[in-house]
Amino acid sequence: MRPQSGKPVFSHMKFQPDRPESGNFITRCEPQGIWVGAHCWADAVLIPWVGDLTPWEALHWDELSAPHFDAVMALSPELVILGSGAKHRFVHPRHVHRLIGAGIGVECMDTMAACRTFNVLVSEGRRVVAALLPPGAV
Image 1 (tube, rainbow, N blue to C red):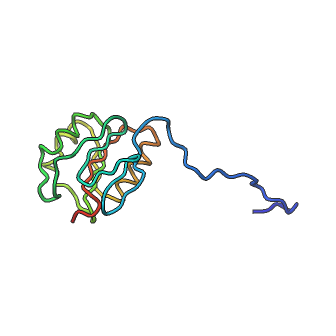
Image 2 (cartoon, rainbow, N blue to C red):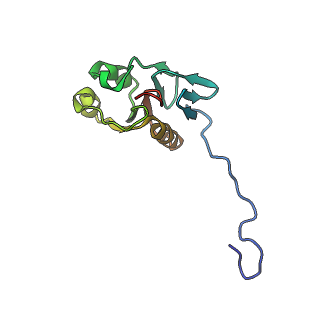
Image 3 (cartoon, rainbow, N blue to C red):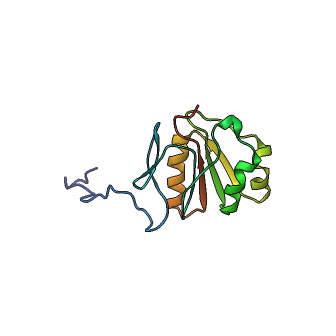
């Protein structure tokens, strides 16, 4: 956009994203795995907003059960993003009833979308946990 003077209104523009100094950010998501910093996770993983990442014992979406979410509950998030692999699926409410009963929000989406959403929520300072199946999981 140019004002009547012909000079640009904006002379400088910052392109790198603002990120807090601390916290986990997903730096890449591809069918072979999920990258957090320089480390790639090829299997299911729990990624809290801060702290250590841990393997998630979930192997396939169809095998999920309530005990898979005990480790998520222990992290005390305000919101859980469930990445269901290559396609979007909904988790059965009986598996996440403890989370919902504790006032913890639960959202399901494919893993690629879950990674993007997780980063946005972490950048907003939210206490979010991503429970992710590998992006290529069917």
